[in-house]
Image (cartoon, rainbow, N blue to C red; front, side):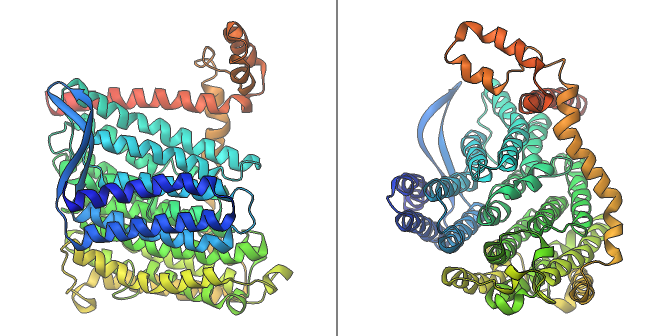
Length: 589
């Protein structure tokens, strides 16, 4: 057993094991200490793997036989997996450190810390996974723990609905990943990443699962609803884990996608559209967390658009930079939400005087988002400069300007001007919150440069030698300055009008998810539509299963929404498989 193999195994096993300790702890402090110790151990172990420059793959045991092949948990260490693991472990540690004050007094603290640790372990498994089977195991654990965390405050109907929507949308798309594994099993192939020998059908199926996990249009709705989770959970989900898993998976299979340029072009074009769509909608949002959620969707679109480059390095650099500045933005506003008790920007204002550390962190993260020269997303634009096509260049310029406008609006409404409520005038930040900000601000500064170096990308083409990055930075900074100036004095300007048409489209998507789709599949789902009451009584009276199921059809449609959403996923996955097979047969007769 080699040292890198042992470190990887322990980095995943330690948080998974200590999640039990966090759950059975007798006090809030003990749960927090168990979680903090586990995340710190994972950070130490993943850092050892990175510092050692470990390369290679290792298999644990053998639990599946495919013809002559025996599959076990197989992990790989390379520049991409090492960088993703360190980023995940770092963000997880900082979120748990911050949670000491933010979650203080919450009655569900044991469940919270246990779920965070299991979530971290699952994401580390995704980062180090060497084949689709290993990836699928941790991918589904990741989905399950995200369901628990999004619905953490399950007493709220909206939190329950958000958790169910996230599980059903991403879980339905995961059928594509499952189908890819089944396809490989049928052909006695293990499909080691990056799937260099996989046909177009497998790449299409995997891409569907990745795009849903990364909340690309029109599946982005679940991520916006996930704002019902605690803000610390949002910081974790939106930075290096969960939603970034989809972009990371596409980066892992990028060499295979290059062999199918048509599919890669479709994926990148969808990323471009999503980036601009979400950035425009962020201009009108008044909920502080939902602004950042739209920002996450937009930046995920940028990561996926950057996959059109000959190398996945620009996308990976953007993923790492985004992880740190987005975690900082969420944790910065978390201090305000904790004090005010509201996520509305209309209830904030003037917080820079009451929350100076939070304000400093928010400013640093905002400058990283617009790409201050040699800082933040500037680094990913430097990495992508040589590969930019005209359409990609135009999309990134537009996204940079929009990012400056919406993040400047967010910053001004939350921190500038005068307090708009009594609670905002009395807001305060606590010791562990301040400690987290002090650690995050320098990490934002070094994350991009470190990612460039670790991926072997030359960062010597600085401001004078990288006109694309310079122009995008100038546009972003201009948008930021104009927006901060305009919104510091007023809470509304005419810029919200730009987003109105897309806001109507977004409302239509909500209506489709919650009303039209369940009703449309009513006839197809008659045999499978069982109410929650029927499922509960099934355990008591199995003989009445069909009778209760048919009787549930008389209940209001909203009670059947979850069943029909799941049914839709099966039908959608079936349609995708049929189309992908047809495309594969046409391309490879």
